[in-house]
Image (cartoon, rainbow, N blue to C red):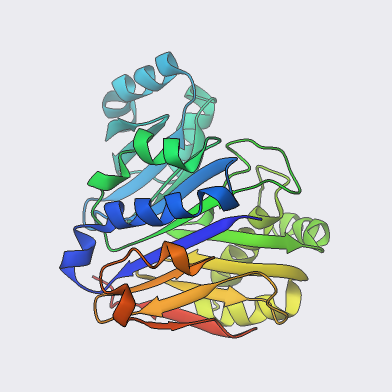
Length: 295
């Protein structure tokens, strides 16, 4: 059992409160996933690319910040146990980190995405990462109760396997080992034994082959076996998909100001205007997407 939340802002009034609202939703899902918590935040367009990396050791984290500008040529700031690098970052930065700071666990790379996650209770996570101060266009969150792999930060969600792309998952995949082997033969690399990372890798691979997000999710309905509710973040929007049986809970709601999804309605009930929102349960096997025009 895990908890998923997602919030997509249609208006600036919601963008300015994105972190506060997401934090309230995440805390509501704490009893569905007390092992770990994580978020994918989409913000800061036009500031160059960003790389989020978790560095557990305080001294190593400080050393990375110290050398980032001089040796990598980008700015760096510390958020919790993570370092956010901003500027001309990309594959060369990942390679530099692997050589000079192998303790850095890269969480995400992209123009807007930042991923932070920890093996800690969601209440503590919200405080440590000061989510209330976050402004942005949209965000996803996950609270984890581990069922098929260890309780570690690496096993926490969201998983990102492509630029600005991430996935959070409630459920389990029965064919993830076979899919993992197929994707590894295609050149993908995985960091964990988690089935959710395979699902994220599957989508990234389909997109790299030229699929639209809708095409990739449609193919997932054929190729992924198991029970799942997915929420997917992209640079400009997000999507929701349940498997054709749809035994994992999910609820969607929409107003003129926002779109939200959660594993249970109580996470949505705290949003402004929730009592007037259109609320519905996502249909089995149906793809739901929201996307704004690229800036």
